[in-house]
Image 1 (cartoon, rainbow, N blue to C red):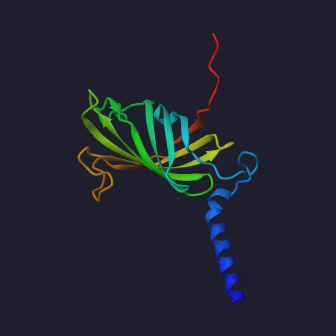
Image 2: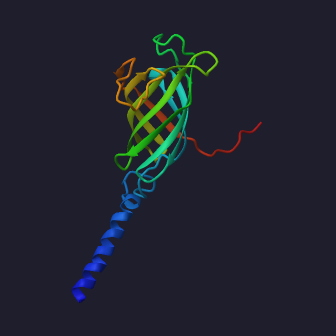
Image 3: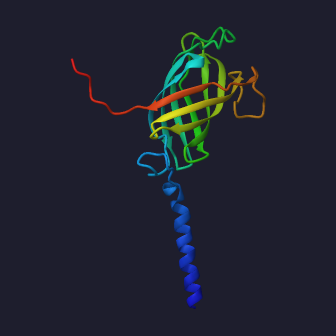
Length: 186
Protein backbone atom coordinates (compact mmCIF):
# COMPACT_ATOMS: atom_id res chain seq x y z
CA UNK A 1 0.00 0.00 0.00
CA UNK A 2 2.78 2.40 0.93
CA UNK A 3 4.72 1.78 -2.33
CA UNK A 4 1.56 2.44 -4.29
CA UNK A 5 1.12 5.85 -2.64
CA UNK A 6 4.74 6.73 -3.34
CA UNK A 7 4.23 5.93 -7.03
CA UNK A 8 1.10 8.06 -7.14
CA UNK A 9 2.92 11.01 -5.59
CA UNK A 10 5.84 10.58 -8.00
CA UNK A 11 3.44 10.38 -10.95
CA UNK A 12 1.67 13.58 -9.93
CA UNK A 13 4.98 15.40 -9.37
CA UNK A 14 6.28 14.24 -12.77
CA UNK A 15 3.12 15.45 -14.51
CA UNK A 16 3.33 18.84 -12.77
CA UNK A 17 6.99 19.18 -13.73
CA UNK A 18 6.28 18.34 -17.38
CA UNK A 19 3.38 20.80 -17.51
CA UNK A 20 5.51 23.62 -16.14
CA UNK A 21 8.48 23.10 -18.50
CA UNK A 22 7.32 25.60 -21.15
CA UNK A 23 6.91 28.34 -18.56
CA UNK A 24 10.12 27.57 -16.70
CA UNK A 25 12.45 26.54 -19.52
CA UNK A 26 14.58 29.59 -18.88
CA UNK A 27 17.10 30.91 -21.31
CA UNK A 28 20.21 32.33 -19.75
CA UNK A 29 20.49 35.34 -22.05
CA UNK A 30 16.88 36.51 -21.68
CA UNK A 31 15.73 39.52 -19.69
CA UNK A 32 16.90 39.29 -16.11
CA UNK A 33 19.28 36.42 -16.92
CA UNK A 34 16.90 33.50 -17.22
CA UNK A 35 13.38 34.68 -16.48
CA UNK A 36 11.85 32.36 -19.08
CA UNK A 37 11.36 31.94 -22.77
CA UNK A 38 10.67 34.79 -25.17
CA UNK A 39 7.23 35.28 -26.67
CA UNK A 40 6.30 37.27 -29.73
CA UNK A 41 2.88 38.42 -28.48
CA UNK A 42 2.15 42.04 -29.24
CA UNK A 43 2.93 44.64 -31.88
CA UNK A 44 6.22 44.93 -33.81
CA UNK A 45 7.70 47.32 -36.39
CA UNK A 46 9.84 45.73 -39.11
CA UNK A 47 12.04 46.40 -42.12
CA UNK A 48 12.70 44.16 -45.14
CA UNK A 49 15.61 45.85 -46.96
CA UNK A 50 15.77 43.31 -49.81
CA UNK A 51 12.10 43.88 -50.70
CA UNK A 52 12.05 47.63 -49.93
CA UNK A 53 9.32 47.20 -47.32
CA UNK A 54 8.50 48.40 -43.86
CA UNK A 55 5.76 46.64 -41.98
CA UNK A 56 3.85 46.17 -38.76
CA UNK A 57 2.86 42.82 -37.33
CA UNK A 58 0.70 41.76 -34.39
CA UNK A 59 1.29 38.29 -32.91
CA UNK A 60 -1.26 36.41 -30.83
CA UNK A 61 -0.62 33.16 -28.95
CA UNK A 62 -3.17 30.38 -28.97
CA UNK A 63 -0.88 28.37 -26.68
CA UNK A 64 2.80 28.36 -25.73
CA UNK A 65 3.49 26.43 -28.96
CA UNK A 66 1.27 28.01 -31.65
CA UNK A 67 -0.44 31.21 -32.66
CA UNK A 68 -1.43 33.56 -35.43
CA UNK A 69 -0.46 36.96 -36.72
CA UNK A 70 -1.63 39.75 -38.99
CA UNK A 71 0.84 41.86 -40.92
CA UNK A 72 0.63 44.99 -43.04
CA UNK A 73 3.35 45.80 -45.60
CA UNK A 74 4.11 49.42 -46.54
CA UNK A 75 6.05 50.14 -49.72
CA UNK A 76 7.76 47.57 -51.90
CA UNK A 77 6.89 46.50 -55.43
CA UNK A 78 3.50 44.73 -55.66
CA UNK A 79 4.36 43.68 -59.25
CA UNK A 80 7.26 41.57 -57.86
CA UNK A 81 9.79 43.00 -60.30
CA UNK A 82 7.24 43.34 -63.12
CA UNK A 83 6.22 39.68 -63.06
CA UNK A 84 2.63 40.69 -62.13
CA UNK A 85 2.17 44.05 -63.93
CA UNK A 86 -1.52 44.29 -63.02
CA UNK A 87 -0.82 44.22 -59.26
CA UNK A 88 -0.92 47.68 -57.69
CA UNK A 89 -1.17 46.80 -53.98
CA UNK A 90 -0.95 43.95 -51.49
CA UNK A 91 -3.70 42.79 -49.18
CA UNK A 92 -3.24 42.45 -45.44
CA UNK A 93 -1.14 39.40 -44.67
CA UNK A 94 -2.24 36.71 -42.22
CA UNK A 95 -0.39 33.68 -40.96
CA UNK A 96 0.33 31.12 -38.30
CA UNK A 97 3.44 30.28 -36.33
CA UNK A 98 4.80 27.33 -34.35
CA UNK A 99 7.48 27.45 -31.67
CA UNK A 100 10.58 25.36 -32.50
CA UNK A 101 12.74 26.37 -29.52
CA UNK A 102 12.97 28.82 -26.64
CA UNK A 103 13.51 31.74 -29.03
CA UNK A 104 12.86 30.20 -32.45
CA UNK A 105 9.72 29.85 -34.56
CA UNK A 106 8.60 28.78 -38.02
CA UNK A 107 5.76 30.44 -39.88
CA UNK A 108 3.58 30.41 -42.98
CA UNK A 109 1.69 33.46 -44.22
CA UNK A 110 -0.41 34.40 -47.23
CA UNK A 111 -1.53 37.55 -48.96
CA UNK A 112 -2.91 38.63 -52.32
CA UNK A 113 -1.49 40.89 -54.99
CA UNK A 114 -4.41 43.13 -55.93
CA UNK A 115 -5.31 44.96 -59.16
CA UNK A 116 -6.45 48.60 -59.40
CA UNK A 117 -9.30 49.24 -56.98
CA UNK A 118 -8.04 46.62 -54.51
CA UNK A 119 -10.84 44.11 -55.16
CA UNK A 120 -9.54 41.90 -57.98
CA UNK A 121 -6.79 39.42 -56.96
CA UNK A 122 -3.87 38.94 -59.36
CA UNK A 123 -1.95 36.30 -57.38
CA UNK A 124 -1.76 34.62 -53.98
CA UNK A 125 1.63 34.55 -52.27
CA UNK A 126 2.42 31.92 -49.64
CA UNK A 127 5.61 32.62 -47.71
CA UNK A 128 7.29 30.17 -45.30
CA UNK A 129 10.26 30.85 -43.08
CA UNK A 130 11.78 31.06 -39.62
CA UNK A 131 12.24 33.73 -36.96
CA UNK A 132 14.47 34.19 -33.93
CA UNK A 133 13.75 36.49 -30.99
CA UNK A 134 16.96 38.29 -29.97
CA UNK A 135 18.09 40.94 -27.50
CA UNK A 136 15.98 41.25 -24.38
CA UNK A 137 13.07 39.56 -26.18
CA UNK A 138 12.49 42.84 -28.02
CA UNK A 139 14.01 42.15 -31.45
CA UNK A 140 13.27 39.69 -34.26
CA UNK A 141 15.37 38.33 -37.10
CA UNK A 142 13.16 36.76 -39.77
CA UNK A 143 14.35 34.64 -42.69
CA UNK A 144 11.98 34.14 -45.62
CA UNK A 145 12.80 30.70 -46.91
CA UNK A 146 10.32 30.03 -49.73
CA UNK A 147 7.87 32.06 -51.79
CA UNK A 148 5.10 30.23 -53.64
CA UNK A 149 2.97 32.16 -56.16
CA UNK A 150 -0.52 30.78 -56.83
CA UNK A 151 -3.21 31.73 -59.33
CA UNK A 152 -6.04 33.56 -57.50
CA UNK A 153 -8.41 30.62 -58.08
CA UNK A 154 -6.01 28.05 -56.56
CA UNK A 155 -6.09 26.71 -53.02
CA UNK A 156 -2.63 27.61 -51.62
CA UNK A 157 -2.96 24.69 -49.18
CA UNK A 158 -4.24 22.18 -51.74
CA UNK A 159 -2.42 19.51 -53.72
CA UNK A 160 -1.79 21.50 -56.92
CA UNK A 161 1.66 23.07 -57.31
CA UNK A 162 1.83 26.88 -57.39
CA UNK A 163 0.81 28.03 -60.90
CA UNK A 164 3.45 30.77 -60.98
CA UNK A 165 6.26 28.85 -59.26
CA UNK A 166 7.98 28.26 -55.95
CA UNK A 167 11.23 30.11 -55.27
CA UNK A 168 13.90 29.97 -52.61
CA UNK A 169 14.19 33.43 -51.01
CA UNK A 170 16.65 33.64 -48.11
CA UNK A 171 16.09 37.37 -47.50
CA UNK A 172 16.39 38.55 -43.90
CA UNK A 173 14.15 41.09 -42.21
CA UNK A 174 14.39 42.60 -38.75
CA UNK A 175 11.82 43.95 -36.34
CA UNK A 176 11.58 45.44 -32.91
CA UNK A 177 8.81 45.35 -30.39
CA UNK A 178 6.77 48.57 -30.36
CA UNK A 179 7.38 50.05 -26.89
CA UNK A 180 5.11 52.32 -24.90
CA UNK A 181 6.75 55.73 -25.01
CA UNK A 182 5.74 59.18 -23.77
CA UNK A 183 4.21 61.57 -26.28
CA UNK A 184 6.54 64.07 -27.89
CA UNK A 185 6.57 67.64 -26.63
CA UNK A 186 5.98 70.83 -28.62
